[in-house]
Each structure stands twice: as structure tokens, then as C-alpha cells.
Length: 206
Image (cartoon, rainbow, N blue to C red; front, side, top):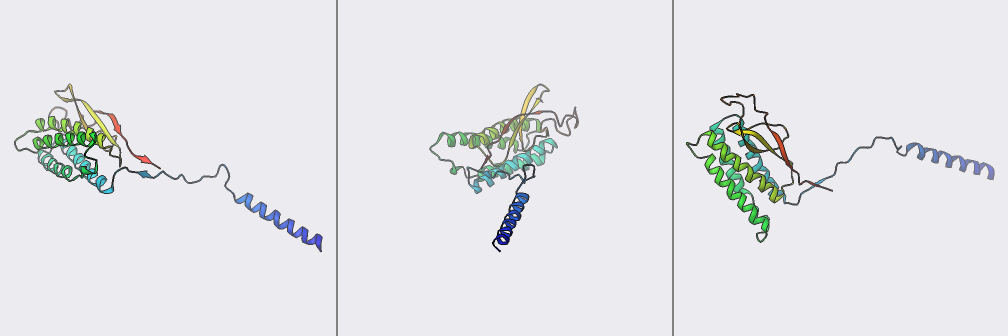
């Protein structure tokens, strides 16, 4: 009886060992890749308001692509309002970052006033848009907006066919707001003219 019991115990141990060996993950088993979670250094309300301003900026860019003067004015006013709605007080006022950010904000407001002004033609508006884009780029870099990537793009022939102009985009694809779809000389043939010069990517992961 003792031998029989011993054999039964050894048999059960063998079955259990075999089960765990067969069911444990093999080196070549495909396991789902877990993406790291993005962690922002800013509050949700701050990020939401900055995202709204960026979306209005992107809409303004597309209005220039389409040579739509009334849409340019509309989205310039929307962008002005959305920038004013951002709670920049979240950035400590006694820091150089705050003062630098405010200087770029003041610049954006000045350029948006020109872009939305009645009687200003699209060529003049594009000059202000170029300056606006520079201020927006430096503002996002200063506050280290970390909810999405921002691409700084440039057209080498935005002005007079030989002077560069810049803009921001949420995508790497080029949609040129200076030459656009209805250029008097190029029509829509140069809408993809340009290249990405820099990428702002402050997204953090854990």
C-alpha cells in the first residue's frame, strides 16, 4: 500500500510539473506591448485651453491655405479669444518663464489685431501670420506644452519667391499657408512646398 501511495503521489507531482511547464509563457510567445502612459506637468484645464488655442491656430492656417479672407478674419478673432482664455497664471508669476510667455502672448495679440483688421489684404495678413507663427512657436516652447507634438514648418519662397515663411502644424504633412491652393501664379501646385524644421515634443511617459 505504501508503494502504491508513493507511486500515486509521484504521478500527481509529474502531472502538475508537466502542466506548469506547458502553460508558462515561452520566449517566443507574443505578449501584448503595454504603451507607457503620458504624464503632463500641467493641469487638465490648462492643457484643454492651450489645445483650444492651437486648434484655432491650425484652423487659421487652413484658411490661409484656402485663400479665404473672411475665414482668416473669423479664425484670427477666435484665436485671440482662445489665447485670452488660457490661464497662464498657472505658471508662477515670479519666474522668468512667466514673463517670457507673456511677451510672446502680447506679440500674438498684436499680430492677430492686424490679421483681423478690415481692409488688410491677404499678402499683408500673411506677413503678420509669419510673425504670429514665430510667437506661437516660442510660446509653446516656453510653456513646454506636452499634450501633443507640434511641427515647425517652413516654405523657402513664402514672400517674393525667395524669402522664407514659417507656420506650425499638428502633422508632418505639408499644407503651405503662403502659397496655398489658389496662388495667382502657382495655383495649387505648391501647396506641399516646404519642410519640417523642428518638432516640439515635451510629452513625458511613465
